[in-house]
Amino acid sequence: VVELGCGLALPSLVAARGGARVTATDVDRASLALAKKAAAENLPADARRRFQALALDFRQASALEALQPVDLLLVAGQLYLPELHTPLLSALQILCVKPGCRLMMSNWVG
Image (cartoon, rainbow, N blue to C red; front, side, top):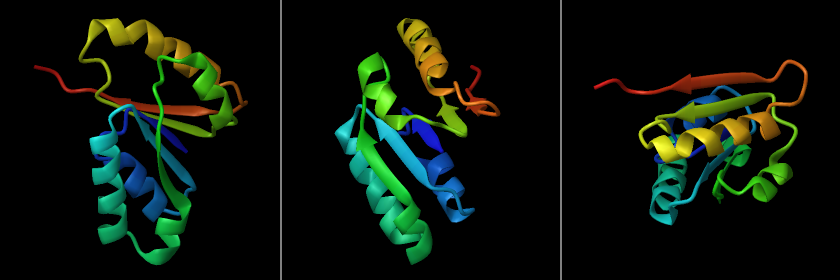
């Protein structure tokens, strides 16, 4: 499982708690620090071993290739800036190439 733009990484934490090996990514190092803290404080030891948070900018295609293959791609709230739409679509096309790859995406309205 890979999460793009994880912020506090709640979807990633849930996936790790559910048994998945998870890589939560974000360009913001403060968010990554909070995601790591949340994992340390809220995940049992076995789930913590399956969780990692990495600095990554999904706008840079070359950085995405190291994350392949992806079975499940999580994206929560990354549509707030129109300039992220095209890079996000490119990232999805790079990461979700494995047959059966699934995308779970959410966004707020308002």
